[in-house]
Amino acid sequence: MTEFDVVYVTTDRCHFCERGRAVLADLADRHPLRIREVELASPEGFTIASRWQVPYPPIVLVDEELAGYGRLSERSLDRFLATRTVTMSGRRP
Figure 1 (cartoon, helix red, strand yellow):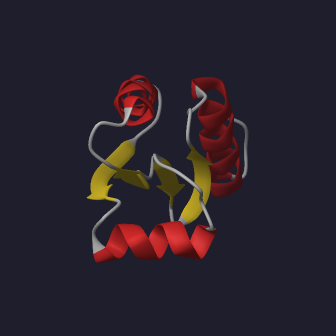
Figure 2: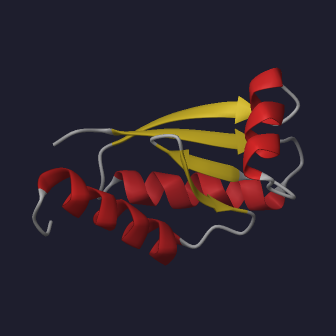
Figure 3: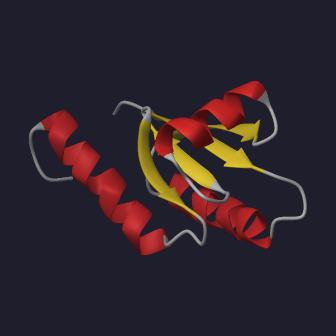
């Protein structure tokens, strides 16, 4: 199974970001995730936030596609990843 490239854009003192880390850790138990964390204040973080016009962190990109931001829903991200798994494999997981 192919890994998903996840970019997780965060900032300091962000309670949504802390919760999001736990959500991604739980999802990594069910999906093959390669997670890379990026600081919002970095040039890459600023570019991502601007490109996707996201008002606040955290921001989750999966394979360069916006998967969520702000208060992350584990259920929504799980469905997003499951749908991508179906698309990649041509069958249901």
